[in-house]
Every structure is written in structure tokens, then in C-alpha cells.
Image 1: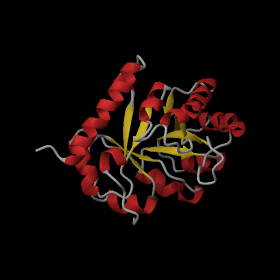
Image 2: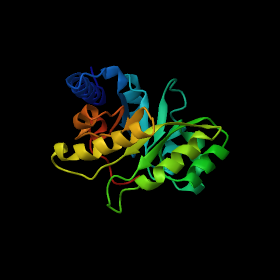
Image 3: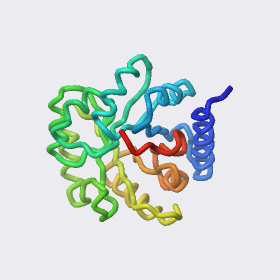
Length: 223
């Protein structure tokens, strides 16, 4: 019997493939990051058993507890996708293989000082909303240059979260702007797109989509 999570994963993968093919892109060039924040270790394991390997988490303490049950999943990659304070760099470097939300030289330096190889993305602020984090575009060049000088960080690309629109077509200008910034800085990877707008994101050049609700269902408010 196929589990509910496995069934949802299959549907999301079908959406990714259809969107990629419509844009004349290789579906295998799109990485699906299953956002498992506030979901149980059992849910992560169920997704892993269905072939999922990349997972996104938002909270250091929550994942620190959960990770003790997930140490036996070979090939699993855990991405930190929440707001990361520089004083949490050390536990983040210990727990995750990818940090998608680097937003300052200070944070990059703290992560590099952990002396662990890490893949990182620079988060760009795409919306003036106070709830949205990231680098201002005017600061991006300096942080890109700094990250490229560090010994332990591998700068993979840019990450962004546009404002919410009921109609995902309205998000396209934000996705295009992030793609343009990535191209300007010769960065090949772009993390953008979620459950409701992944098709538009892929058509606009996303290489990683972060999908939670469409895989794991609605999230509980407690963590």
C-alpha cells in the first residue's frame, strides 16, 4: 500500500516534470527540497523511503531533537531554510549540509569558522515585507565576493521568497529578478518556488523548489 506521503511526493514530482518539460528543461535538473519543519522524524523517514533525499528545516532546536532519530538515512541532505542568527552558526553547521539563508558577511564568517565544508545560498530580499529576510540587492556583490574567498563554504546560488499572491502568475517578476541576479553574479543555482507556485518558479529558472504542504500536509502550529 502506497503511503499518503509517498502519493503526495509522486504528485509533486509529476508537477515538477510537467513544468520543466513545458519550459524545455531537464526535470532531473530540478532538486525537490521537502520542507519537513515541525513534522515528525517518522514523516521524514516515510518520505525518505519513498525516494526523497533533500529536506528543508527552519528551526535549529527542533531539528536538533529530531536529527537523533534520522542518523541512519544514507544520502539524506538537510537544508536549513529559516532565519539564521550568527550566534547559531555552530549548531547549524553541525546539523546541516546546506545553509540556504546566508544574509550577511558576519554570518558567512561564522559558518566558515566552524571549519566544516558547507554548501550555502545567499538569501536575497525580494519583498519589502518585514517578515521577509535576506540581503538587499545593493549588498549582494560584496557578500558574493566574500563567500568566494572562504575556505569552507561553497557558494552554490541564490535563494528568495517573494510576497504571497493567490495567483502564482503575479510572482513571476520576482522570480525573474532573482534569476537575473544569479546570472549577473555567475551563480548557477536558484532556490525559489513552493507548493502553490513551483510551476512558475521552474519556468523562470528555479533549480531547487521548497515544497512542504503539498507533501506533508498542513503544519501543526506547535514545534
